Each structure stands twice: as structure tokens, then as C-alpha cells.
Length: 74
Image (cartoon, rainbow, N blue to C red; front, side, top):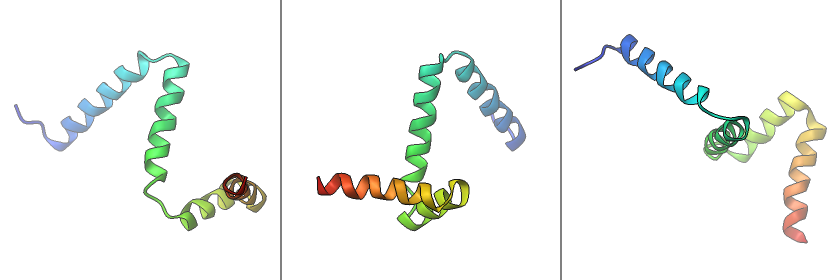
């Protein structure tokens, strides 16, 4: 059996929907966290700080940055 690109995409959508429907909120939150964490590990520091600044402002980016740099000093 070989699916074309459109059929394969629909199969993936159906499977993803099936998985999501079976998750409780805690499991869904953990899955989203894992996916975001895995994705952001591929970014540079500059990309992440830039995105935080763009979405949440420079103050939040500075707060996040200070949280991790101050934690290392302690």
C-alpha cells in the first residue's frame, strides 16, 4: 500500500487527532512542553531571546535571561 502526499497528510492528521482525543489535560500539557522544548533546543540563544522580545517584550526576555544566569552564580 502506498499513499500519495495528500493521503499521507490526512493519515497523519487523523492519527494526531486520535492521540489528542485520548489525552487528559496533564498529559496534553506534558506533550506540548516536550514538543516545544525539543523545537527550541535547535534554536540559538539569539533566536530565542529575539522571539521572547517580539512576543512578550524586552522586560520578559531580560527576566528569563536573568533567571538562568543568576541561578548559575548561586
